Length: 195
Image (cartoon, rainbow, N blue to C red; front, side, top):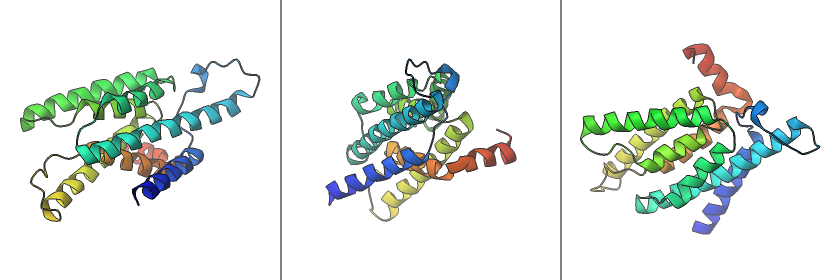
């Protein structure tokens, strides 16, 4: 049953990767191929998004089972994010997430989220524009809160305050990709919130 679920998730990741073209600046992609640059851009972005989503899924699965994650699965997401050539987005989100983590840890007197979460968000920020990544962060926190209360109320878990956030990040990435099909979410955020 677990293997069938993994295969279904990989198929869904592949479908999302095919339908969605990430936000990659075409001017920064240097290619020596003779094919049309737009066609290269389209295939290149879909391939690296697919590989990145696979690593996020593996990270989410391990984080869900063991509530801790090694850099073996998270650092490739950051490296793949660097292949989008959106260095300014990646540096911006490393800084923003580190500042948020520092202040929330001070307020709550415990670790708010781990370094792996920062690495995942930073790698993903290479694929999306900043407003989409902020929406994704907000959505993953809401999913994490529901997951925490599910653990407390339904499962009667004693460690309900410790939530694996990477599965919530994975869910929010998939939901965001679905919502941003044909730039729907991006246009909505620009129109109503002036992001």
